[in-house]
Structures are given as C-alpha cells and as structure tokens.
Image 1 (cartoon, rainbow, N blue to C red):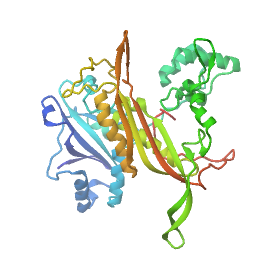
Image 2 (image 1 turned 135 degrees about the vertical axis):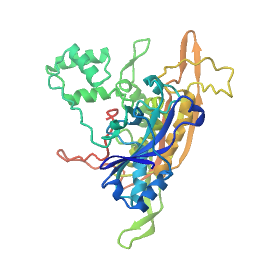
Image 3 (image 1 turned 180 degrees about the horizontal axis):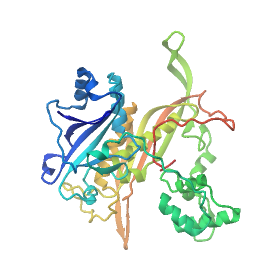
Image 4 (image 1 turned 90 degrees about the vertical axis):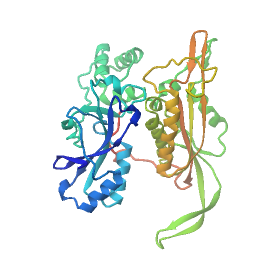
Length: 436
C-alpha cells in the first residue's frame, strides 16, 4: 500500500523521488503527500481514491517504507505552499471534497544527519520557506493551527538595552544607529514606544519599503543640499504631468488613453456586447531583490505576483494584461562556457549563485504570470562584476524587476474616500512578517 493512516483524519502517501539517481549513493530523498480528510480514509469511495492516485501520479501497487528517524522537510508551520493551494483547487474541481487540505513534503533518509547537509548549495531545501522535523510523529499534527506568538511590548522601556533585548527576541533587525534614533525620538516625546510603532519601524528595513533611504537628505562635496532620491525620481512627473492621471499615490500609475471597442457583459441579457468604452493604461514596476537572492524561484514568483496584485488593486479595480521581468546578477561562471573575464567567485554563501538565480528566477516569475493568465512578454538580463583597487563590485544581491501593463476603466481610475471607522477585512492565509 502506498499510504499510511497517521490519525483519524490524516494520511501520508508515498510519492516520487526528488533527487536523480546519481545522488542516491549518499541519501534518499522522496516526496510524500499529507492529506487532511473530513472522513476516515477507509470510508472514501474506491473510485475517488483511484482519482487521488491518478492526480498525484501514484502507483497503487507501490509500498510506503521509511525509517523511524526519517527527516521531513515541509513548509513552515502555519504557511501553505503554492503547490498546495493549486492542488487543492484541482481536487475541488474534480469533486474530491473529502480532501480538506493537501501538502507536499520531502522525506530525507541519510546516515549521520547534520543541518550542514541542508545548507549545501544544490540541496533542495529553502530556509526561508521550509523547516525540518524528525520522525513520523513530528508530522501527525501538521495541519493543526499554530499558536500565534503574541507581540506585546507593554513593559518595553525607552532604553538602549530594552531595544537590544527586543531586537534579539523578536528579530526586528535594528542597527545601533536606528536604536539610538528611537531612544532620542521617544525621549523627546516623553513616552515609551507602542507595539504598532515598533513593528512599523522594524518593517522599514523590509525589502519592500526602504523609504528611510529614498527620503534621506543628501549632501555633495560642496555641502550643498541635494534633493532626496524620491524627489529626484518624482521630478519627471513634476515637470511633465501631461496625460498622467495617477502617480505615487496608488498601487500603480495610470496614464490616459483613448476610447476603444471592448467586450462588455450585459448582466440582464447574460451576453457579451461590444461597446465603445474609455479605458486608461495601468503601469507598474517594482523590485524583489533580496527574496530572489535567498530563494530564486519563490522570490521572483512572488515579485511578479505582487506586481499583478498591485495593478489589479489600482483605483477600484484594474485588469493586469502583460508582464515583464528583468535580472542583473554577477558573473554566471558556467562550467561549459567559461569567459576570460570571469575571476574566482567570492560571494556570501547565504546568497544563491548567479547561475541558480538565472535558472530558477525566470521560471518562477513566468510560472506566476502564466498561472494567473497573464503573458510575460518582455524583460532583460545582464551580468556584471569587477574588482578595482581592492574594491569588489557586482550584483551578488541581484536586481529582480517585476513590471507590467494593464487597463483600467475611466470609472475605476480613482479610489473612493474611506470614512474613519470603516471596517477593513483582511483576506488570505497567514503570511510572514516581512513587508507587512
């Protein structure tokens, strides 16, 4: 049998190998599928069990075997992988309503296990999105909701040491300069920080919102004040506003367009008709650099996904239409195509190699675009690295650009005013603190 019942509602099913045969001399790594059911496995009709096996490409005659010390590599507690959410949609479409949740995990069997194995460059484990546990017992409660850690700083005093302690406990990522800034700021305010203020200040370090750099004041060598980076960027719009309807105050920019014939749904007649309607152009570009550096496929995928979301959330609703992606990385150093200008690699090991980024990043971005139904039509790629007078330049931390074009009805272009006290509903599953 290819399955094992873990408890009254949870089943594990054996899947295919993760690594190719040439790696099998030192470890075994296989996929397993965890299913959360709304009834006992034995009570699911035979034809539906066969359909589950078919969808997961499972051989019904195979057997499920593993050691008691097997190491399971799974999505982080409380999160759901993209594979899981897509597979659950497929199961629902196939009327497999007995399966409430499904997740794909990896089972590792090796002698003398060490975490160093997980950190090897080509090993399929991602510290950003995955965690490991040992033994079958460790996954029996996989689908139970995690206990949320309470972020309460009621007793935090406005002292340097208090911020150091909170920094270590909650992972704020604050440096000495930022801590001193907080101490002095709250001293002038004559009060302690609130939990919301600290979380928001911490997130200023996020890849998504480094506004402290963009809004910083600059001085050149002659001591003359320079405009901030934001002011320099916005100067184009300030001097050339013709045709720009929305800029720097919504999820994406909107530029004016002409009227054209479009399919329009007549909800009364339940049929499409052509109508001459005015739709404007929605345009957006953002970066997702650090996530792509750490986890290229997922980082670039969510970069494109976030840009699609932002386009769609412009005004009171827009339609994403076409995507673009771009990548700047350090030298690729391909084994079969070494270039004379490429010197020995020297990069932080926490950062993925340029080769890995350029293999997995574009696949991740294209995957999210395609699965949403938007073609990725344009982009760029460059590699650059240089050593000059002891200074090493390069794109070890890559530039990953996600952008796109969409259309937005003239009636939807501008957001409506929201009154104070209006209730806000947050939709979606649990997420990481980064960028919130």
